[in-house]
Image (cartoon, rainbow, N blue to C red):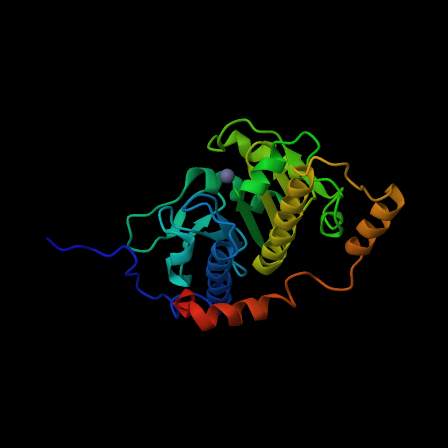
Length: 259
Ligand SMILES: [Zn+2]
């Protein structure tokens, strides 16, 4: 009997557009970085990128590959209506909840080019707090007042959930899925990743501070407003400065994400 290695995936560079290939490389890098920085949940959750030259299509992980195994050629290509246009020769298909969540955003938000969803312990814990993410730290003020909250109604497999999620998110780029996890939207995968990294750190800091059983020092409303405004009108897009260094880090240790 021949044993097929599910990770033995034929490279597809050259058979897709240069724009799609670049999106594939960046998205594969994002999966590796998500895992490296402690934000993966085995095979669960999903990160996606819109295909730049085919706006009704997006790339998503094959359901069954660890985030540390994802490569540019392994990513599925699907339409926002759910047709699978490319699937590598593996046993792994499209995760229904992943499709529901991400297609909802690509349908409703033409500006969304990358979407990241996590189930980190800190993100799930803050998603279960009525107060949500508080402006307790400078990092948190980058997100405070700009986060959408979406109520939990069970795993997102029902197509009707797409409209409900899009309504909850509106024009926001950050979302806490109550009793579930977190989600970020970016004009690139890099932007979605850096936003998630910041939200994750803010959640971790809030939980550690709240666990200390002592009075918390909350910045004044004026200071919070000033800090929020500084971030909102910042002089640079997050991800542009950070991403090349993160790719260099991967190239030193995990260069096969580019295959
Ligand atoms: Zn989820």
